Length: 118
Image 1 (cartoon, rainbow, N blue to C red):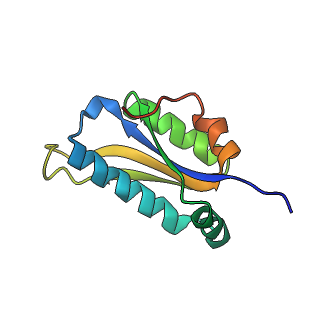
Image 2 (cartoon, helix red, strand yellow):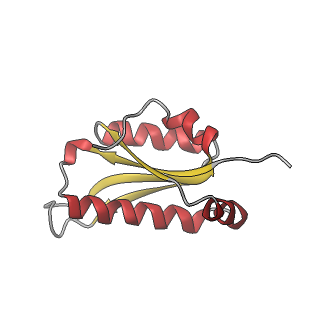
């Protein structure tokens, strides 16, 4: 049986300049939301491997939505996260996109050229 490496990726809008706390919460929402949509067998394998997660930057909403379309066209599970706008933002704001877990090479085909969140 072929062995795959699995991971989950969270794409974060850098134009929003979220505080560390807001960023952590939005990434957590993305991770959990997409996980709940994912195939149970994939999730179990991902858990056995240590639940690799990577957080990457996208420039703005347009770029985030472009990656959502790419993700969908590749058959990857995703979750677009919208903040309610009650604390740091004065209106509801789409903040991030969760992808996977899935086979690392499938996710890298879509997100492989993006930079790590710093």
